[in-house]
Length: 120
Image (cartoon, rainbow, N blue to C red; front, side):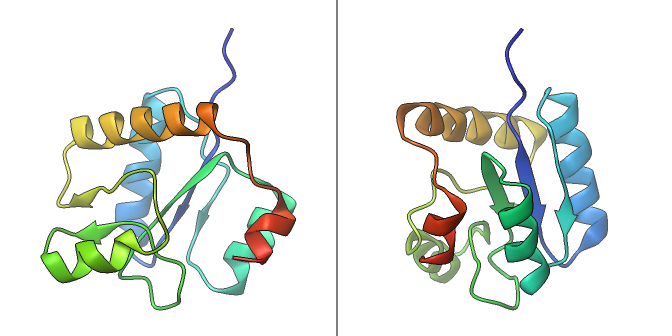
């Protein structure tokens, strides 16, 4: 049986993040944590290296990956070269398809180490 992909969910709106987490679990992914952010995020990643992360671009620190669908946020989100974007409000199908794309990219590239993550 195929191992579930571990997806860390990071954001300040815990109700939204919990909903995303539930949907990811329904898609047979593993969510090792829902983190409100800051230093907790980096500490969690170092101790529980996920395969990928879903991070809200509106997050109040410099860790950014997802966005509202306007041009300014889209251009801001392109900077860290994410595998995919999920715009709010999102549909479950959007979430599923974007993570399928991300997982495909992960399988074609080597996994970063915690050292790589610290040096970004």
